[in-house]
Image (tube, rainbow, N blue to C red; front, top):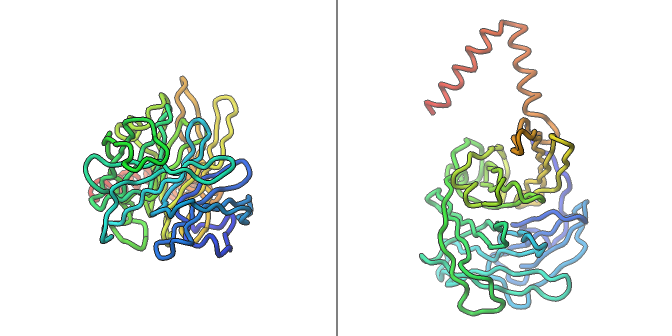
Length: 322
């Protein structure tokens, strides 16, 4: 199904968006310019995508790629990009904290195994940052800080590799072809911190985090996969809110392309024995379950239930063969 826009950013100060987070008053995004350091800034948007405030870095940011909120409510910019084609790779990456008033504050980090390009940031339940790398091999690394972050340190806090995640091929169109299907371009955590999501240029992968262990969820859990077709260059994803009514809940998120178009996705969940399971996904307010139900009804009415089962078995066999 074709995406539609929730709102479109038409401000010249926000033309190369890479990271996004939803807030009670709208959105916060990072404008990442590879060609003009003066265009690298943090923009605050209202619900209609109108820019309401612009924040600049006190010193030049290298390559901001994502935004994340820590459990204590602090908003962090992930200045962690490091393109593999760069002539000089980075010795440190940085997280910038955004105080309620004043300029962003830099906190540097270092990898234990050399430079990595990265575009995703998550936090553990204890507030420890997890950097998710963007690897051409198709296996994203999860790197966790080994000590509390230090403001304005030159050397940086050492990270350790705590896991990896390998996205799968979904067959969706994108600018980078097969490579775009397996590189992680963004991350987000749900408001209740019980779900996390990683995205590529073609799909979103969401996990339940029932015990607060983000790394365990990603490395051992089975994600729910939502295809994100025909995005020019999707690099951000954000949760926009949730609703809980007894054992039923819904979680809304936004997928954001580099051009500022936002695609709404809603997960509907049911709780059994304190465990939440998704039973439907709505993209552009269109239910996947409802869509398949209509298709199944047509086959049953035109042919038979046995014919429906036969077709499903054939599709399953084709998927396994592929």
